[in-house]
Image (tube, rainbow, N blue to C red; front, side, top):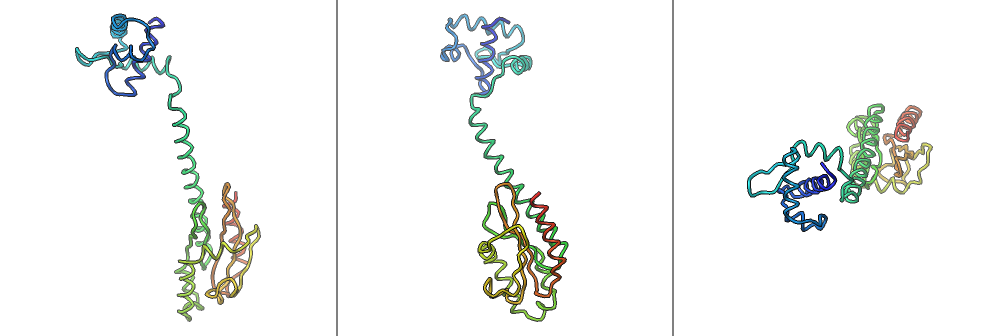
Amino acid sequence: MDLRQARLLQAIIDQFIETALPVGSKRLLESGDFPVSSATIRSEMGELEDMGFLEQPHVSAGRIPTVKGYRVYVKEFMEPSRNERAVRTRFETLREQYFRHKDQERVYEAVALLSNMIPNVSFATIPHRERVYYLGLASAMQQPEFLANPSMVSGVVEVLEKRLADLVDKIELNDTVQYFIGDQHLCQQFSSCSMLVTKYRVRDQVGAVGVLGPMRMDYGYNTVALEMVAGLIRD
């Protein structure tokens, strides 16, 4: 196969990949890449067919690549896609979606881990989303304080479902555990509760992870558990 035949084979395969239609001499001439006659192109295509690089689906059709043609194309002629910029843009979009999903997944798993360690509510703000994810409500509601005061339970549930994201957003977070014990200024519905909260960072996102429960909680245990889980997210 000489240089012109190689360029011709590459052009035929490029066009076939793009259109999925047999490629004829007319279309190759219209591309302007081959300053020769239509007869010359047809002759060269015939030789490429004889060499096993092309085949003709039926008599009146153009040529399409054979297995041998694709193999030599990949090995010898393939160049970066003309749509490389679009490919890279698409990749970057999907890459960011992938990492956002992983960021969120990491926090979900950390909250689940914390929930399995404590008999209280564990929560965290979710990266890239204006919401708070929490677990452990059913376990926390079994505490004597909540069992004895259903109205307190309904208030806590209301805040968890509707206002916790706004509440946490008002806190000036840092890397140490902060304690809000019966803090009416923070939230009236939490006046009989305690909330422990600290900061985490995932890539470029800063969020909060914390514990909510009755004031009669094991602060030492919950503090260590929270610090360990927050450290897990930060790592």
